[in-house]
Length: 466
Image 1: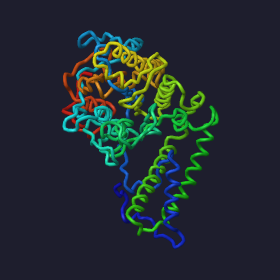
Image 2: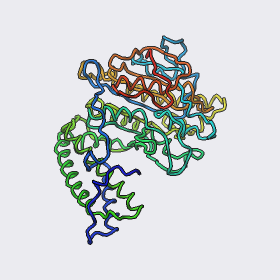
Image 3: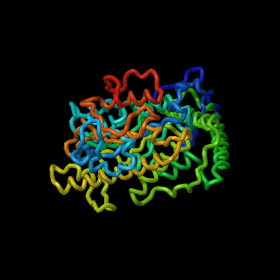
Image 4: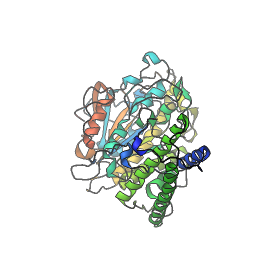
């Protein structure tokens, strides 16, 4: 980790009573507070995001959401049958009928950096690793992972000051940041969509209860405000402790201990930023709904709870940027609840066997049904300007694999839902004939008000006509 504070802001010299052991315990105390974010002054290295807001022409919030499904799709069931300009829903897209006029099916978008090239096997890791970064990820199963900053985090840096949380990252899988998951590629690429730097993924949360309490506080309806204030007071007192502890550390630590100190100070800085943000935006909304119990046993229920968290976050303007990894790329989850005992990844390599193709198509339909329920809920929820939240959103649904059997990464299965506050023209199918996905991301970023972004990933320009 690079040192991000100057020599003028180094900790005070160590007193004779503080040992190296106490330093390591202090680091442990900071690590034990994963919900907190930062304490050092802003001058110690972080760059404040630009003050622009993601808003529509009416002044309502403009949201960006990304929902990822794994292992590609069955192309013959996914592709709309009609030509460009009209939208006749394919068999896989039938659940979207209630919101058809709020959809664009985007054909011909590619992630060329997910192709094997000289790296060989590992298409699942590359599929998800490139999906929001549009760069070729480094083939490694070690700690030297390297991708790129994802477009959601680019947007969050720019518009994040408008809300209590710059972004929200969700998943239905346990988080993994290390290990070999796909032919020499780190698990970090498959279990994370968002990257705040080329070497640092933003870990998503899989427990809906923890997501809810992060957004609105612990306790029942009516109690959360008081509990939020108490938690803020407790966080501040803890920060006083860790700050004093940091100031007592020796500036002659060894290299490894100095790296731990860097991590420690970075954690303090993040806690401070979160507290400042909470104070600036005031007490969070208290939706009159019960706190989720935790992770449901049934996968469908788990997905729907996470979609509910995204819906609540958008409805209360807790964030305007959210990503949801429904399952990791390469997931071999079985779907006994819809009568499919085999694993999804196993079935996706069907080699033309019709019974396996039919089962994958059922899984594709299952994921689409969950997404359709989420969009229908957004469409039924009025925003502050009288339009629906879906109207004032740009929700991307897709996969970094196209044909899961052949591991293709061109002509990806992509849907863009919502009207972008009136800046998009949904209700149709549009083809872009071999255009980088990064071009779409530039056009989305423009609508969010992100400035100064001339290129992103392997972009060649901006998409028009969406």
